[in-house]
Length: 105
Image (cartoon, rainbow, N blue to C red; front, side, top):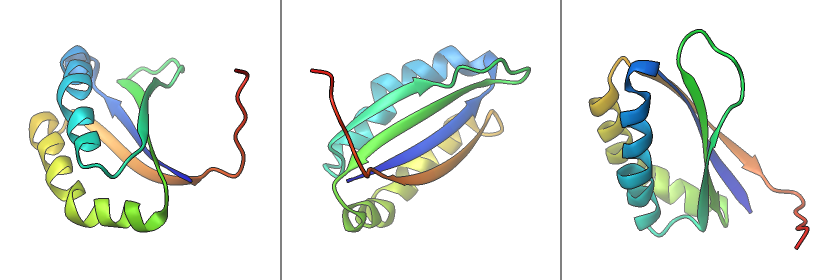
């Protein structure tokens, strides 16, 4: 199992609009591709002079599925984000392999 992690620092002036759009449009569009199991939207808890940072995590079953997402869906979805928030954010992507999970439940 893997996590496709997108870290975004968004300017404070557009933060509320971005957060609403992520929750109501972008993340549902990503999940609608059927490539991911679930997701988390997490605010990175650090004091920053510029912007607010988030980690958006999508859990995926294998690297082949992630590669398919990156080829078929990511360019369009990333372009929508870029066009809406051009020059208002910085982002980077990482892939995390889940080696172990436990639950307190």
